[in-house]
Image 1: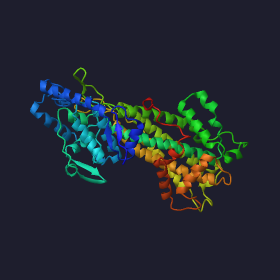
Image 2: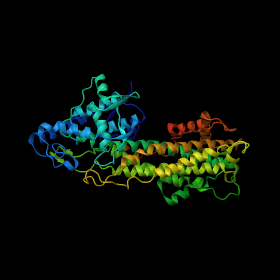
Image 3: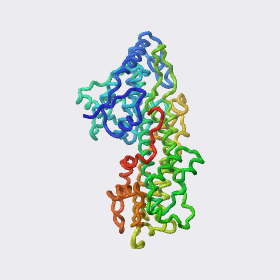
Image 4: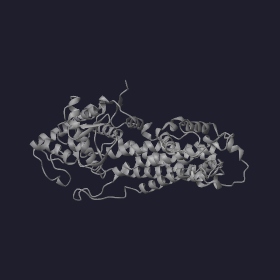
Length: 516
């Protein structure tokens, strides 16, 4: 039996979230949160019974907030909100993204500031436990006033409306609820609004990008080190004193990783007294570029962990004073900005890797056979593999234009500045796939280059890396159908196995203070 993931609302770790992303979980909320849930729900009920007019409880929404709703229409108000806001289009979000959304929404509501009853949170937990994933179209949110359209599709499934995906099969939500003897949710005052308001979709997509960026940074550090040895580059630019003089933390840590990876290489020792003065930037400036990417990824990890634990709906219930206060926690600007930063880091990791591939196949720079193959001319070798890497790097450059600087007014200018966090985060996964392919091609090229240096051996860590590559792709002795090799190398990058193998050498990503 899998150990349930017990969540204390407001205190989920990045490891908890990574576990949710990686596969199905059984989720349990810490029982200590129940009192807060009940107190919040009681506060909402007291407002309803008092007849006091409060936004989101007995009023319309957005530009219609001035419309007062009679008590006998409050259930219709919340249900209509969910149905009318289910306007998403496009491909469906993957199960691992939807699972993150469900977990974060349940944990957020369980903090008690949203005023929902425990039955609403139980409905979310039932979906998580039974691996029932609402069909959520990917497009339709501007990342302000919450991820309204996608969260409406999530919420509709709880009501028995729309479709869900279960074991890769799409079925009507009502049918699946009946199968598991689950009662369609009937919404109480404010509950539809609490479900729809929030940044959980943007945050889930950005977390996915973060988790993939971790793998990319690790794999590209390894491929860059192997390329350095294949090209007979020098490790002098990794000298501790250079990086300490600048003082950038990520840069210093990356330089230490490069030193550890190259130390003891026979290939490096063989050219210590060569006449070459400097290596190209793609080799020499790896600590500076990758260190800057590391810093950005760490910053994103800190912000996204806070947001994953946040209460981001509106209005909020403060049970100590009995107040319900309207604010703007649904505005996803923090997510939008770090999604932009992650996009830049993912693009730069791929850009540097592509430059190293170009360097390796250029015999005038690397000193290796042209295009890394015996009998060039008859064989084209890595010529077009590099073209593929170049195409992917350029595509990522186009995708990495900041989304957060864009804004378009909605809801009759009531919501006049929006974050665009949702599509800013949604692009991260396809960008990560592109960079994974680029780094995969570099791993193949670097392994091929090191092979041309035999019988000299690389360092102990890089020999381990070389063997991991050769487990999945043999040496490229002559031209062959190349696409399966590239796909295998890309899969090696995205699997995260390289990060696990070399975790004692590579810098840690999860360093934010809330993990301590």
